[in-house]
Image (cartoon, rainbow, N blue to C red; front, side, top):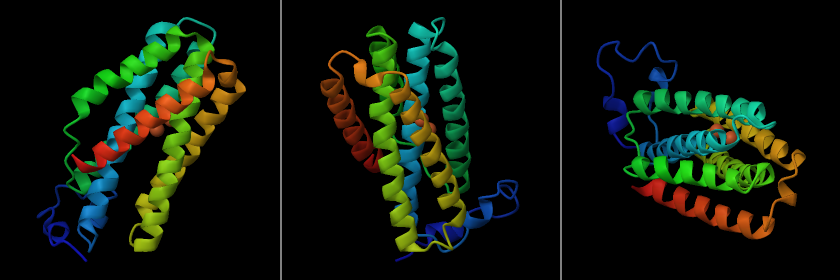
Length: 201
Ligand SMILES: [Fe+2]
Ligand SMILES: [Fe+2]
């Protein structure tokens, strides 16, 4: 089914400068796209806060530049979802102020366990996010791969970036972090809850 809200968007040329402006006016499955963009925006926002928290603790350590490099990619991801939210007229989750704090606390807290703790956090989060993006890719392909071509391209690219962050974490001894498997399980449970909530409110 198709919600007419998508077709109502953007009288005049206000959003034409966005490449996604055109797609936003097509016959999109608005509830599905709303959910996807809201949760992805929340996730990238949270990722930025995690890396900010890690940098606050480990910024001047040997892994500082590496964390900064991953953070920079998260900034690009967030910027893209900000643009897509405008183009598709999706409101952000009401939980942003909470993710703001929770993300930073998770980042700083894991970094306080040391470099390996920070990397364990990265592995746990990025594995969850890659899986989450893969689920969305499947959903969009089932919906209509042609219609959601641009969105699919974005999500696939970001999925690859997150996969890379995950691998960087593993290469930097994430698995040697204290209580690695407990930590990973706890963080991934948190990610599941965050995804569930951010898709809905
Ligand atoms: Fe990201
Ligand atoms: Fe990432």
